[in-house]
Structure formats: C-alpha cells, structure tokens
Length: 315
Ligand code: G3I
Image (cartoon, rainbow, N blue to C red; front, side, top):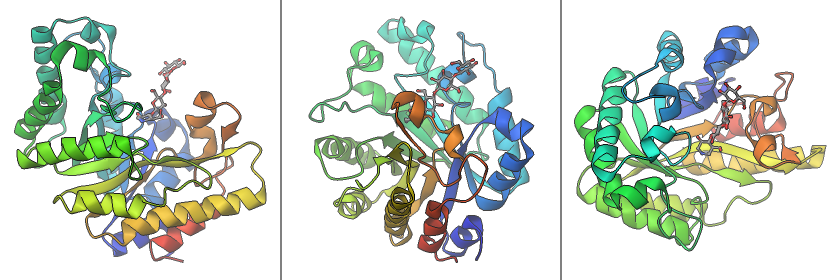
C-alpha cells in the first residue's frame, strides 16, 4: 500500500485528519490529499457548540454538514468532536442555572446527534473534563453548575439519541500512566459499568522526543476494561526552526505512536490534528514551536508521513 488510507484500510484501522470546512471548499490540493490519504475525518472546529448552536435553539450546521457530505462522498468515517467542552461554548450556556443548563445540554446533544445519526460513527461526548492538577476534576462551569453528574447526563443523552454511535471520553496529557489518566480511568470504569461509554480518546498533543514510555500499557489498561481506544488529535511539536535531525526524531515518535495503535486490536485508529504544519493550532498557542504534522506548508510529505505509512504496514 502506498497511501496512508490504503495501508490503514488493509489493517482495519481509521487514519483520520482534522479538517476545516473552508479549506476543503477553497483549496483543491488540500481537498485532494484529505480524500486520497485519509479514511476518516474530524471537524477541527465545525461541530463544536459555538459553531453549531451560537444562540439558544438557533442551530447552524452548514460547515459541519459540508464536512460530513465530503466524508460521505469519499467513503470516509466521521469521528464527531465534541458535545460538551468548557471551551468554544457560547456564553449564553455558561450563565444558565443548573436546571436550564441541563436542558440546554440535553437539547444540544439530541439535536446534533440526531442530525448526524448514521453518518457520524463516533462522538467525543465530553472533552477535557479532568484538570491538570493531580487528577482533580476540571473546575469548569459545567462542574460548578451541574456537579459531576453532568458527565453521566451527557453520555446517557448521547446514547439515547444515537444508540449506534460509539461514545468516547476524550482528553490530553492522558497518553501515559499518570494522575490525570488515573482519573479518566476511574470515570471510564463508572460509565462503562452503565454501558454508556464505548471508548477513550487520547489526544496525544505531544512534544518531540516525549512519547510516554507507558503509553502502550496505558492504552492496554483501558482496553482491559472492555473499551476501545483511539488516538484522536495527534501532533508532535518541535522548537522552531526544525532541523533535519529533529524531523527524523519526529518521524520516529510518530512511528511509535501509530505502531502502538496498529498492534492493539481495540484501537480504532489515529487522527492527526490538521493536514499541513501551516494549518496547525500549535504555533498560536505555544509560540516558538510548531511543525507538528505530516505535511509541510507546500504540501510535501515530511519524514513523519513515511513513518506513519510504515507503521500502518505500507511502504
Ligand atoms: O472562526 C473564527 C474567525 O471567524 C475569526 O476571524 C478568527 C480570528 O481569531 O477566529 C476564528 O476562530 C478560531 C477557530 O480556531 C477557527 O479557526 C478561534 O479564534 C481559535 O481559538 C480556534 O482554535 C481552535 C481551538 O481548538 C480552540 O480552543 C483550534 O483551531 C483547534 O485546533 C483547537 O482544537 C483543540 C481541540 O478541539 C481539543 N483539544 C485541544 C485542541 C488544541 O487546542
């Protein structure tokens, strides 16, 4: 197999990419690579609450629709991102009281999940609900207003709305075994015992040379709970400018992460968080770092591309 997509298909895995609806529409080169190299799509922003329901009951689906249409045209699965997050949620939601916030959450999940039922294969139901502080729950408006039960409410609602979609809990810095992934593990155990959770998403926004040594064991312990695992937002950032040794190290890091998923039957796949380095969120958030993806700004393939292809069994 000579494409990521061909190699991933051959081993029954998703190889996904986070996409932007405007770029898909306006840029033919972007569009062609997304279609030919990936068998799964995630909307980088278009399915988030601020994009889909900017004001109460006022749903705007044009960008999300165009991504799902594109996926359907190109025979790609869709991993939906995301129903409940503390970011990119409009302020009208954040200021509601507990009863109204619950109603808003239930309406939102029902409306979005129903719209894409049968077309979106899996959902990040909740995103980043654990803090970076010793594995405590994240102190978000969701937690402060609704209490910890907001997570169960979200999953129960999503399960009822689309019983065939796989439901995921998704977070960053949980790739290895640590206090934060321990907390996700406990939450996952509870949700799984109620049969309202199918998988755990490991974002894997990694730093060059820092693939956690416990990553494989960590994913395995979630699989042992009877859950699927998925690498949902992979990127590996480098201090700029990146030299050729660093690009080779990045390739090795990518290879390691993708191999972990390839070798684990219950790992549904890997999604990279953007196509080209120029499309990445990284330089804006971590100034002085970047070049975290598989394609350079001119759409040429980086060493990391070949490493991922090899890890998927292609060449
Ligand atoms: O759409 C507006 C546009 O109208 C406006 O002109 C422009 C000016 O700043 O902003 C545009 O919105 C930006 C949006 O991306 C779309 O490009 C937002 O400012 C910007 O904050 C937003 O960033 C996104 C970020 O989530 C928001 O938290 C990134 O693209 C996206 O990659 C990033 O993705 C998150 C995952 O959802 C969850 N895990 C972490 C990951 C990285 O932060």
